[in-house]
Length: 393
Image 1: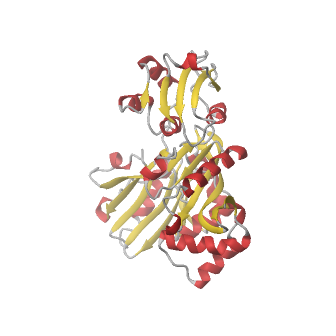
Image 2: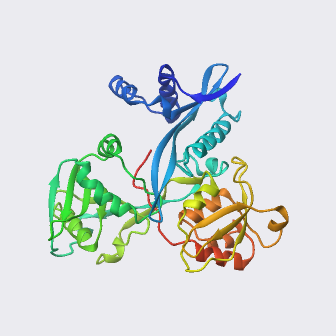
Image 3: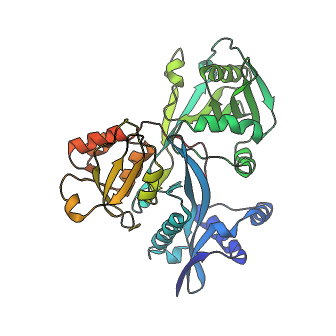
């Protein structure tokens, strides 16, 4: 007999062992006790075969910024199967069940970090963000000259950092709203070291950096700035460590323009594909989505979405957007959808609406089918905003 359900408290130890095996790590007795004390069984779902745990995943509750608006988001993590149960479709069934659960909870979009992008593309998730990885030598650390503010080093105080973080990440699509627990249990624990805050001449906090100096390397885990003055002030602070370090490591948004500001832009930088996203409920997602406001209603668009794992998304729809950018997605009849419809997978639709890839690119790549005027209309409706995710789960 097969069953999908939330784990009981006495089953979390088995789920922990499965994670250790699948992701090839080993917890010390102290780490195991710490995890056991903080684990939340209600977040863990298991596929049971004949009463035995065969596969499992963790479903986390988040809010994510999309075009300046917060959306409920379901974060998937720890997807794993014991080898004797693999290639039997258990994970596929678990993912479909989780999609239905997220829909019931009002989580209209889902994120995950993939062990293999191709695997999760089969289930409708698609790449939605990357980050830029810098490595600068000591000689390449910029010196921007004096600024109007000052740096102060502070303790790991989430209440000081969170307002600056929220103001910064709300400019991007796909960033998450951090809770107090997330700051304390995830951010400060994983991004070890010091905290520096940039305060402008009016005494306002306009940037911060989580950083570590170790083995002649300055690692900037997070560099957050709300204006150019704060950016320059933080980099000047990094420069003050030049007698201690031989290189600087930094992860930044994909659209970061540091190299352009340097005397010599030929620094080592790498674009790293990162997380995947999936629209869980297309109609509910569209109803919250802030389309570009044109002042007058746009002509309705016919859209055919392919989604074999979430049948409520699979079919023909009419997308109507009013002059203020409010959208409605309603089922269209078969006769309506035959002519002039745009057609794409749920993954391609996600990439477009998250802002990671534009309709014109997907059309040229064969991932969005339909007439050119429909593609151009969709280009006008979807606002432009970069994606970024500085967290991990």
